[in-house]
Length: 120
Image (cartoon, rainbow, N blue to C red):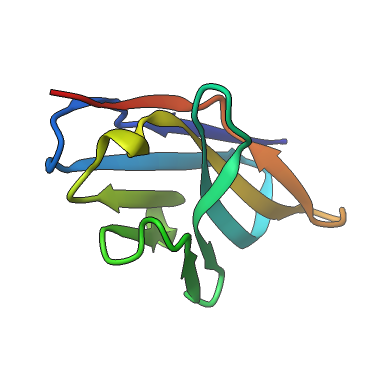
């Protein structure tokens, strides 16, 4: 019932910036938590940043001070502003969310991912 679609990925040079967006759609009753994960080749998927319905955020140590997660409730969108990008940030970035659909318990949903490549 809930669909997450990422956008904004692409190629950027080291030190550059990129903004990812995740749009949620469907029969959403409430959003409890949304996050960005990433998975690099040969590595396990890791949490990059998360934000609760109340606005509380958390970040991986590797991106603190460089990445900012934010919400736009009116547009059902969660963004990830990435600054001072490094080659090690290269990965497929996935949007994740915990939503409650009408008369159902909360459950988690995943987007299909968007590729971010940081290279000169």
